[in-house]
Image (spheres, one colour):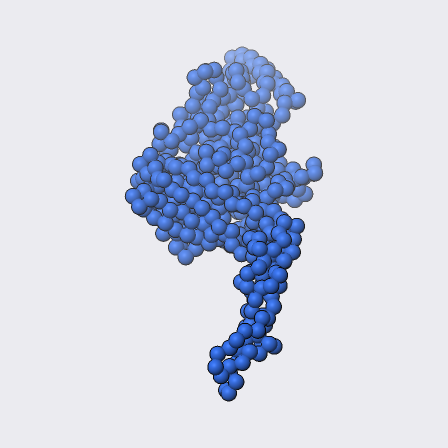
Length: 490
């Protein structure tokens, strides 16, 4: 008689096991194992590579031939690569990364799951709108905290997935349908936290989860308990405490699919550490993403672009943290056409931090196909009120581009204020001299238009609107109260 649990732990095992099995004539005489009680629960990135398990049934590192490959340097540890349907020239070894941003959609079901309220694949999932500008990075972890890092890791598919409407529309953010998508909600990443259950852990899953991984049970499916690397019901928050209620669908304030609310109205800011994993972009999936998005993916493939989107899949930690003091909003466009030129106006007031206004917008461009190298030019103009902006993308008359145009919108005090403008401020953005009839004023006040039909004035003198009499034509006289010529015989 043999016991499947009596297998020595190979080099690279996640926790220390001491197994002693002595078998006499089909009878189990002695089974004694001890678990290193001081060992912390296994980090998820040592257990799952995306949706692939990195362990054999006994908790030893093992390649699965799909997205987990053997490490040719050590010959022991499993190594996480892209999902196996990602084309070989697009596949890469996954890195541990940190992403922060605004929650925009919660998991499919509440935590913990039950047999009637479970998760597809026993995974907890949510979506983030990535943020940049934070500087308190984690040693040894790749931070996605600059525009350059975003463009290094995110493909155009992520920009399409974040579109404000699921099927795109030229009148909204899906410009020109399949070829140009974009807006301030378009920066997007999907996060998946895997449990260890019968569906993912093999027949020996419960023993391995408890004794090798040290994971905690929470919820169950038809086969039994489901195990997690940490307690999703008590997520760390800024200040050292934790959330006091289970992490439910709609339990966090979130910005939703379309009526997005990223910051000013209380969206939830999340920090995630885990594998930056390339998943196949599901262009051939009839259920998700929606048809126009899938067509957009196919057009990227036809142009020589890769066939993946980026996820955080294999999550080591989740925390609710404060956003950085200097706030940023990313506006992203997936551009896959040419020759073309588009201008798009985005109202960014839903992403506006309280009391702050757009101070600057810096464009960045990255290319994703050698077949369509561009060049693509990108520019932006801050509009009156400093809460909206106009974004312009264009190629040369003979140019084609498969690219992302990313705009870093930085918020701050009003760009034009009494402290920095001796003239007048136009729309909180531009400081004018304050001496023109169309922009008159002083001391950083809002510019006035000197008009007889508005203010009863017609000239700007010493930065103030005044009424200056003038000679009227035959049959007319100048009325100083109304500051305009009136008909004398009418």
